[in-house]
Image (cartoon, rainbow, N blue to C red; front, side):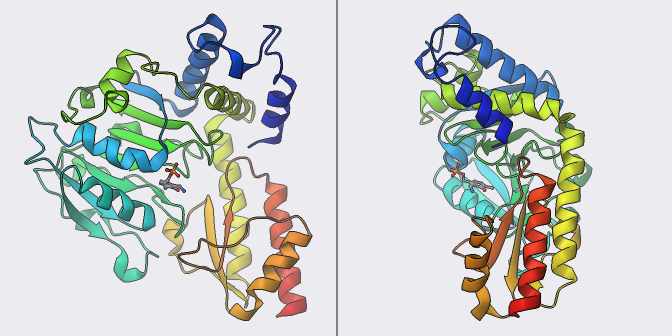
Length: 357
Ligand code: PMP
């Protein structure tokens, strides 16, 4: 979270703008929260240049719930039923793998492409994807948080002869760069990386993808019902929406998405250059698809892992331990991480290599 946002939330905690109550105490249908909610939506639409024909839904359940909610809503497009609904998946790491497995509970699935052979260090070229004309949608994870693999350009399915909508799980790089909405049917993500606190899930969905929910889809997860109710089908995660709204305003103050993207590029370039120029650290992801948000790296001498983490903690560099499934280290350098934070990490890494390795 940007520090300025946390400070503002703290200042408004007990009394939001003279209303005599905190945001958590407001009726979600009252005028104060309605204003907060609408402003957050409008700011996000402006920031990400989300076209009119897309609905912005503020949901709950996180990215993993969307792994079920997406097939429940989209698999039965084109007049399909649960018996013949089908979706294509491109598996490029742990999160898209989970999405595929979860979708199998609601429709049949096909693996259109995978980067398993490369150990999730490269992206399969879209031209090589085996896309089915029967698929109701094509799913990708546009930034694999654990493996640190990012689509720097979203695939153009139409250019590949595929009319199915592209679904992107952009949980871990939403609002870090612009989105080409002409290539996307639906984008979803948990808020807790770049957008706000956990508890809020963002879904941006094209109008024509509403209204196809399978009969078993819970009403609270039916995109059509949520869109009709302006994300107020039931009580939304009000405080998380308020916090996300503050983050959106902060992003606008930074100069918008283009400015934050430039900053993210600079941060990532600095860190990858430090890794690549060292004898101790290594990142094996192909340069063209290295994540600008999540930078996994390994110490060539694994016996130094604990000392590296302990030394980092001692100088205030926290949460650098890699995901348990891959080990090593991971620096998550989301929007709110300033350039100075990455500079401090790089300085520490150089010092550690010089003195300990
Ligand atoms: N997708 C991606 C790309 C993620 O990074 C995560 C969480 N790290 C998830 C899905 C799961 O999100 P949640 O914990 O909000 O369900």
